[in-house]
Length: 76
Image 1 (tube, rainbow, N blue to C red):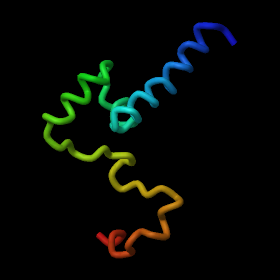
Image 2 (cartoon, one colour):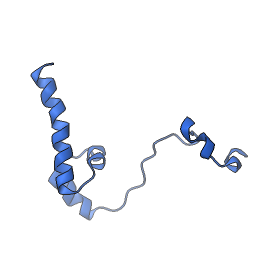
Image 3 (cartoon, rainbow, N blue to C red):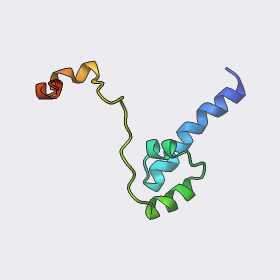
Image 4 (tube, rainbow, N blue to C red):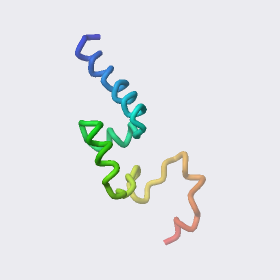
């Protein structure tokens, strides 16, 4: 383990704690691509609601959710 790697690792818990302190979502902050937490907080108040993030490609059902799928969805 080198100092540079340790510094990179310790940056994430620091960002997480700052987001928690400011009451914002750590994941949303990371996904926003913003580098300034205060700018993200300000923009958060002024922005419109975005579309939801698509986690899986259209038509794909993860194996652990197959049993929950509606059989009518399979019929064309």
